[in-house]
Image (cartoon, rainbow, N blue to C red; front, side, top):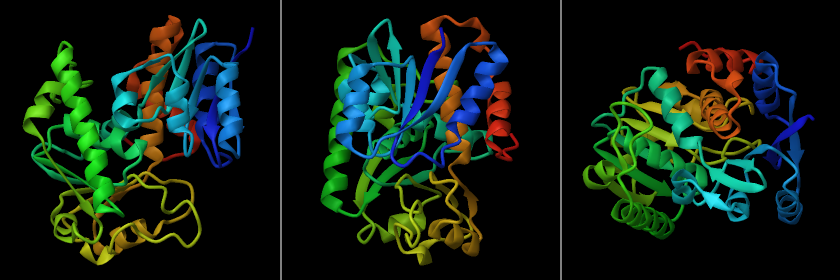
Length: 310
């Protein structure tokens, strides 16, 4: 029987996920097929999720909250992000994960970016932003600053995240980091300084940050600007934009003009896909998916047509 896997979202026609995952399943000798599930409305997405006619799906904008709500159980990564980008069907029960943050940080560290002791700004207040904020915090920065269009919104989102993280730390055995040298949940809760603001009120924080991560969808549509005043950028900064495949975004152009080290979302896409394959291996028991992470990364990047040397 052919197992069905998809990327769910709208729009998803630009997605490289089918090419990446199908390359892995072909190499592993599995009769699995990964396709696009482009659904324009939330009602259609919810009906698709309710039918559970898939082994696993990846979820992108705008349906991560709906995917979380459809799950029978939620990994901490999805719960803290308030959205799932992976659902796995384990004998009829849906398990939710969010691999965005882990994939983002793994890619950036593989590209030589160090978070240890740094000041990091994360732009956006949605599930992708929260997943990245959490993974960045585990990488050991001095501070993480969540910024968005509304200072009040950023404050409320960050407060909920910190409260929920504290509740997890208080009622469970400490959850270890996904990588050696990173912080556990309890360690990041105690050590990392979390701040918030808006693009207007946090100009000094943006200008002073060592690393800036734009986790908003700005750049996916023609005419989108940068989330903040690009005049704040300087050559000493590293800038990462989760958007890929839509031409040069306004933030990318500004970062390059300012002399920043700039990376786009292609590597994060591959990084979170590597994590997803590991989840599928663990849940299905398919030993053929047990390839080394570097091999998986190279295979999937090549299938997507990305030049991502590590």
